[in-house]
Structure formats: structure tokens, C-alpha cells
Image (cartoon, rainbow, N blue to C red; front, side):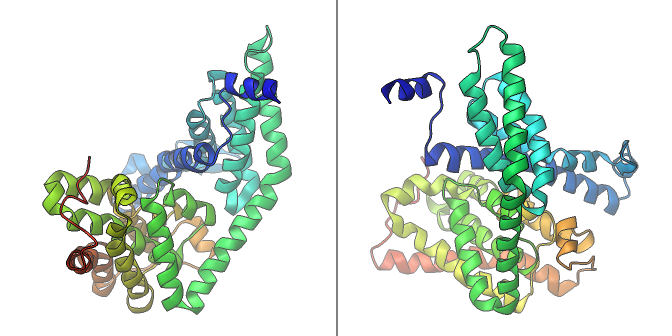
Length: 368
């Protein structure tokens, strides 16, 4: 056993929740962002603003034309797998081999492809790391082994994993339609909390394929955390903190949450309020790429996702019954209130009550 543990240490194979559930999941979200999300944004901008080079097909694969954005989205599986390999510190030959593995796995996983890619890329990367530089013909053995293990794992587990993730996502979305108030609270709070934790809410939403009303609740929860923390900590962190948390991530507050968990009360209560307002009053739907549901105000991706879903719904959203629509003043008002105005008002108010109760003190929200 000691020899085996020594081998794992030598190969930098660390079997832990942090390595797989935080590092790999977070990197997967970045890979998905740089492929599927960027592709969706480019396609939407090109279509809405009639930009020729963004709407013109640049390549045809199996008689299907692809634009620049289309190609970016097409390579999402490869991008996710390479990002996961990078997070796992895979050596070059393993890392580059994951492009094939990720593409195949995402295709085999269907609507739940991202979750399948997470599992399969981890398996392929760790197995590839184990064999790397163990032979004198490493340049042949490592990529062949990594590719065969990855494709084999994808062939066996990607379809059931993808189906399970898709089914669970469908369950959440159907439950939100049937119980918009209670599910609005549940989805908003859980996804918002995930956004602030050192895990990836964007990856979780993508894995589950959250669009529609559930996607809108997720956007509300993420905005409550990001805008809420940004505004209620303004006196400590000023403009730099407002921007870094409001357009970056509320995850910056995690060290402070560890010191005093009660500072998390206000954003969480705010998400519990804005979630059902989004689902019941404004009927806010996020029908862009599912990853947008877990982005909040990060680069305004949550809002871009809602807008994209209005004018050009994603394939996943269309499969769930979404259709293009022309947003009215009520829709825009709902998006602005849920995303910015309500979190900026409610969160500081709740936090003020926490301060009066002695639960939050000056300096508790100061960023390092």
C-alpha cells in the first residue's frame, strides 16, 4: 500500500474532493465559457446586429455549415476536457490527448454531456498521468493509452451519466413550472450559495441543463449574492470591491464567511426573496446557454443569457419548448430589478438588521 501511495505522489495523482470537485469543476466551467458561451454570444451579436463575418459560415462539416461562434460551441467538449486536464496538472501529451476524449464524450453524453466530460476527463487524465514517462516510447504510449482509456470510458459511462443529468435537470425545471414559488426559493438559494462557494455554479447549471423558469431563478440567486455582497460591503471595499464582486465573483468573500458565517445571511435571504419574484411575478426565463444560469452578473453573462434566450434561444432551451420572443418593457424591468435593483436594496437592509443584532461588525466584509 505504501508503494502505491508513493507512486500516486510521484505521479501527482491526488484523489480528493478539492482536486475533483473544486479545481476540476471550476476549470471545466472556464473551458465551457471559452467555447459554448463565447460561441453563443458571438452568434447572437452577429445575428442581432447583422455583422457579416460573424454570420457567414466558415466551414461545413457533414453538410452542416458553421459560423465562428458555431465552431467555438462545436468544440466545447474538447475545451472542457483540456481545462480539466490543466487543473489536474496533466503533462503535455496527456493534456493534448484529452481534446479527442472530451469531444467524443460530450457527443456521447447528449444533453448531459458536460457532466459526462467531467467524469471521463478525470479518469483519462489520471490514467494518462500514471503511464506518462514510464516507457522509452512515451510519445506513442501516453497519447494512445490516454485516448483509448478516455474513449472507452466515454463509450461505457457517458450515455447513462448524460441521461441521468439531463433527467434530473428536467425534473428541476418541471418542478419549477409546477411550484414556481417554492422552487423559485430553492433554486435561487442553492445556486446562489454554490456561486459563492469555491465550486462552480456555472458548471452545475450547465451539467443540469438549467434553462427556462428554473434558469431565471438561478440567475436571481447568483445576482443576489454578487450584487448583494458588492453593495453591502461598499463602505469597507469602496469602488474596487463593488466592481470585483459585482462583475467578478462573490467568492472573494469566502475567507470572511469562514471567519464569520453570519455575513452570508443577507445575500442568502435576498436570494430567497428575489427567486420567487423572478418566477412568479416576472416569469423570468433564461433560455440562452445553460451555463449562463449560474453566472449571475459576472461579466453580465447572466443578463446576456436572458437576452440571448429572448431573441435566439439555445438548442437546449428550444428542445424544452422555448421560442424566440420580442421582450417588452415589463420583461426588461423584471431583468433589471431582479439582477441589480432588488439585490442592491434588500441585501444592505437585511445586513443592517444583522448589524443591529450584533452578528456583523465593521470590518467583517473587508476583502484581503
